[in-house]
Length: 268
Image 1 (cartoon, helix red, strand yellow):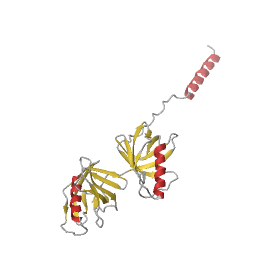
Image 2 (image 1 turned 120 degrees about the horizontal axis):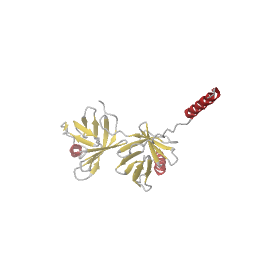
Image 3 (image 1 turned 30 degrees about the vertical axis):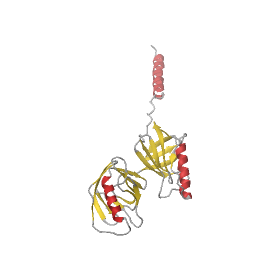
Image 4 (image 1 turned 30 degrees about the horizontal axis):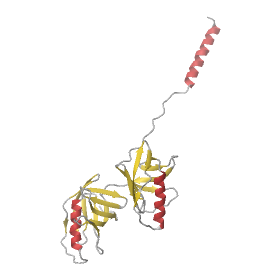
């Protein structure tokens, strides 16, 4: 075999090696990331393109047992939803209350309802929920709602009177709740101060026996009866539901025991 032949073979081997090195690698596409399930999650509107949001109240959105519900900033709504593989669609026919609200709240409510109409997908990013339209554009960003009671304070708006009815607070009285970080519950029954303990595990709540001071307040009429009903309602609470600046404490059977609106944070 001549030297010319050796040179030709060597060049051919080198060319084949170069072609193999330059050939594209058939790497598989990375698997698509499926967003976490939305079931048993609750969110508060954090940003809406083109809209200035008030500190409170803000629209909310909660997913539970195939139902989507919350407040649009003016009225409460509820509907069913379907979510799978990053796709999300809310049933167009939503049930809603029909309250009239000031123009800024009404405009925000209309804008948020348009988002609920147009949403077709979702993504969880940096702990926030992004609602997307059919083209993948972000319609709104929502932040996770806090669910714990520790470190919060509330002004009571309704009390179960023990007669299968929830009644408003008597004018001229104030009922308050403070859930401290150390597990202490304290507040005012409208006349006397009270304290006790609470334990929360997820949506479950247990309130220990409450002790109160022994003052007597004659006016307004019904003040002392209201206080007794309030303390009894608190001790009957077994479930908790937080939504935005609103709180509901419910019995084990689901009856509303106490409703409240967020006040200033509790002091440690």
